[in-house]
Image (cartoon, rainbow, N blue to C red):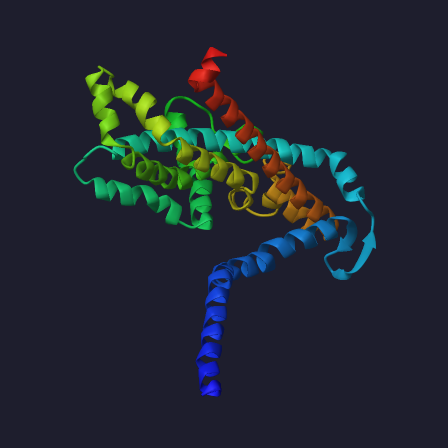
Length: 322
């Protein structure tokens, strides 16, 4: 009887132990796949790239490394081509991001109304995003062609001479930015539309009772209501602008694509990284460019957070009294 009495007690203790392990270990087991994938495809490449950036490495002999410390970074800071690529990345990013988000906000505001065929317009707005970068860049390259492009033909109606969009700095950057704007405006508009539809209707009714116009409702109710989504799209667009690669590469139509034109007039940091690593075979310098891009993104995100915090404090009642 003593043995039979101890058996149920032992089973109960094992069940209690398994139950405690299930409660404590199950959450970690559920999130473990994400961390495994993140470690394999994000964290390890980041650490390995930082190690490569501290060495002189040739693409043809990757196992043969020569320790140079921070020499790749100091050489980068003295390289005029790096600063030119950084400036081009910034200007193309501003030219493409600001109009893109403003147009997306206006488009989402229009789609938010009960329009006939609104589903068709919503689907049509996402079509450019579904188009591949290669196809979009090739079409826009033909549109901006100097002698037979439709853009120059249209400008010629107003007496404007043919513009060599690829050979000149600002025309080239405007043309590349137009590709980015075309592809991403509809995507951001749908994000804004989803956020707008989550804004409570009572706020609009209260604003209308107070005599607010449509424009005032948009600026005082809609925009503050989707502020989190706006910040998300700004971060997303900034990240994409910093890593811009496919559009200028295809726009260059050949060898000039990697160098960003004959005078590097539209070479971005992404193109410079590719040129250093896969054309010049200098993987150490390419890794240093990659880390410079990463640090630039971190700096921009920190500045955005600081500016957003200052703006929220200024708009709050306590901040206003101070």
